[in-house]
Length: 231
Image (cartoon, rainbow, N blue to C red):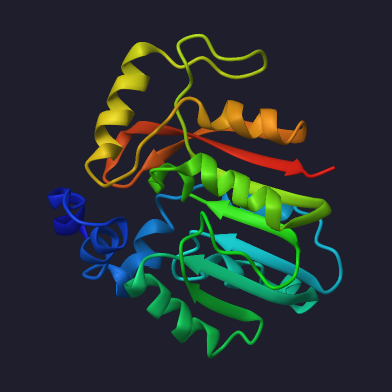
């Protein structure tokens, strides 16, 4: 895992090829390592009010771990589609689906794939910052949500130099360091991301926080949790 992270994401080739080359050596250990890095996911799920027989779509969901993190609440889920462009991670999701009948892995581009029926909830967990065209993913999530449906997003985050009202302002060092740090692994922190979610889903709530980073005890990475509702 550490060797792969130090090498960073390959620069050449299509997005699917870069993802496969980067994550194939990590796939079997992906969940265990990122449990310590990807904070706020359980809190995001706790904040979601799931309807009975909910249809959930997770975009950029990788191994499908978030489905399992629902625990007993998964009994109220009719279908959980996990969509990802990375074949090695979707392979892990297929193994998990053998134990979780509600889980349906889909190897596809989260920016264009659409379910057969509108979704009650769309979840995007630490994926938008890895998508070159994250705005298209947000638009796609809007299209697949039924009226009154919810989008739930958690991701790494740095603010604009002068953020919109109500948001935390990060200092210049924080903005520069974390952008440079994550870019090696194909994660690009765009300060426009959270404001774009707030603008598209005007009925929303969000939390900004910081969390520790494995093996770097003095650093705390900024991230946000966001829940928005389609009218």
